[in-house]
Image (cartoon, rainbow, N blue to C red; front, side):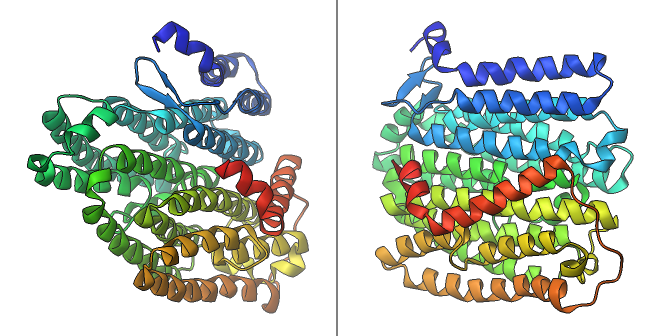
Length: 468
């Protein structure tokens, strides 16, 4: 489909692009920056309402993008993540003294970039979209330019990201050299022939390096704890879910369309990487004393569980990835919403700030408990549904070793999540009661809290809409 004809199927993206430029323009004229943030949220809501799943897959812009149910799911996931993050940012104290209008504009650009990543069907577009996301991420991480931790986190993120992007680009160059095409289906057909097998194996390993960085997969996870700790809390919440989810989207599309004939090579590698990722994340999280670093290592472990579905790569495995990503997004953003509230009240990200939280803010303590139990995978919560499906996918094709390691890691994870719960309920409070959260933060907390419960209690409602 040529470019002009493709535009009518690209309406949500055009709204985001126009809204981003308009948000940046409003920043010059509107003194009350909260209005700029509310406008940015409205742009996201309009784009989400106009997003429709196509009746059949469509190739847009001369085959550069593929609009299908898979891309639509990640489009909605990206818009939800950005919308929630903007609401979290409206009451974030450190932003009030900085250029918050630019902050909201960058997030709309981020939503646009993430959608491009999900729909890209061409090596060049995949690379450009991923780098678009990366560049905006570097800016958002270092947005508090007077905060030394924020600046340090941005520099570390940039250095690690640049190296991993270069490795992935080299893998793409090998594929282009072998197939003479940038289109994913054409490359997959070319790599079917035996002479290209060594080159395909090298290329898939390079892809794992580049995209492994985006999803914080071990051993490419080293950047995550420092970056998550130093970034503004709303940005940290966003980075733990949206770029990770879209990294998995690219991996699924690339493995399905290019490396489908080499599953015997990359599937065992992903089993090992899955075990390594969840083990490193869980074991390291036990010793953390900073809540943002704690959740950073928790997010690394969660990536390991999602990799189980990718390693299996059956129909059930791919469906499990989507279900887990939705459950993880709702749960982790909810946990960070509580972290944002407690951090604003105590001016601290230390775990000690959560001592006696049940006395200082019973609502926040109860909600954080539900979010942590969901991350642990306990029923009847959203996290349990996600883990049930990835475990079921692994057991279905008898990946018993992977299942055993995942079960052991789930026990370790439950231990350190209950550590926070014990701190909130069994340790005496060290300060006065907290004030009520802002309206925006209250909406986010209750919305995510009810969504996590609803997905656990009525899973069929969500699953039928995810899997179709």
